[in-house]
Length: 319
Length: 280
Image 1 (tube, rainbow over the protein chains, first blue to last red):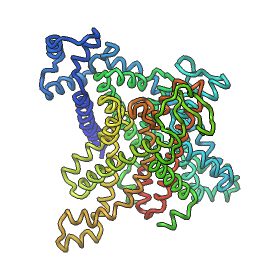
Image 2 (tube, chains in turn orange, red; image 1 turned 180 degrees about the horizontal axis):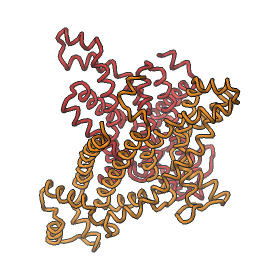
Image 3 (cartoon, each protein chain N blue to C red; image 1 turned 120 degrees about the horizontal axis):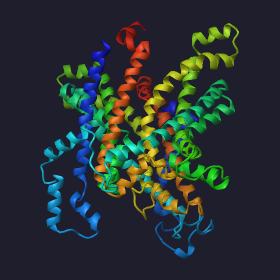
């Protein structure tokens, strides 16, 4: 299959998924208890509005139209980058999302990096010292790490590094020092799961012929592990890190609340408590769009970077 | 299978944790020394004593009793959610995998769609729209969490459908209903049960996380996540109030993870590798 055909198919599939998620996002607004017109008017004046005022606003917002018409209208606007106006901030939803997303993305990337920096040395030592007390301890820590709620780790870290040792700021954003605790909080969970997987993958590779060849050539066990086995053992780690990135963004929502990190999650939670329906709908569609595009990019790069995937069926048959 | 499960110390530890927590959840009213919602402001923030082993919270409620009743709420919600998503996901997966065709395409497209957004974020949006509360929490989790089961069950059914005993049943004139109920379901249920125990840890984190944000169980319900949310305000003056519920959540998740890992490895190797392949 040529690259163009593959890409065209992949994009067509993504368009169907995007349309379905847009329908879900829009329907969410219709599930909401209460009439948006009523909510907006009460928010404006603080008093219960008259029936006439409500009717008038309903007409102006198009709320008196049938569901299908409203959905078509919303979808048309959404596909042109128009996600409506937030009830809470009275700003266009898309520009709000755009201004908060970079902070969340930065946090998630920093967490991913922190996770790998902790996980790789831990897994290498664990695999090298297989069966020792260190290995058992490291494995238990990694299992505990995936079992502990990330926001709770956040509070423990605040208690130790900010409140007791006073090394780092408690919350907020500003210089890089503000990023350390939230990134570490979020990164520890992913470090634990990467370490678990990398250890297993390293032990698999250590049994492979090329490692035995390296040892036979006189390489030290440590060099065989780091110089030869680690490179191959990292392959599944890269795939799983890419897959875990979505989870990381989900957990970021909660961690942002703990550290008052000005990202998309904190904005979303504030929108929820303010019953800001356009913001919630826009959030779902925005996140889905980002993920759909990222998934296509990841698939595409696998296909053209990794010859085994590119050759597809032929390679599978040969092995 | 029993030997493979009980031969491992970690799976036994997991089983002990899960059974103990289940016991606490069932018998909380008899185990708890005090009423978990009894407010005594004059005894607020008390340290550990003979009457209150773990001290009291800001309203003078007994922390230990709240933790024990918390097992009932937190694990009860997770148990109910698991039953819901397991039956919904298995139903969809069996229908898609067994009948195939257009129905399969449509169902799997819906699954792909729900997987295109991180599940915690979509759950957050649904709970957010419906408004905070336990009902919204359950609806939010149930409408998303089934997709994982649906996808795995479909894969299992596709494999089982080609097996000889299904052909034999069909040759004997069995109806689709009979084949599914008597032959397909029994052969996939062990794997589904393992998946459920692995997923329960995740659900504990999701339920307590959403309650921690103030979207799930509401005060004065002694749910662990809600207790953490309650204690946030007093974090710097009374950090112990945040310590205990967090520990309880971690122990519960650890128990489910240990047990789930053990069950997975005790499964038939082919099914276990299928679960591992999808990163469970």
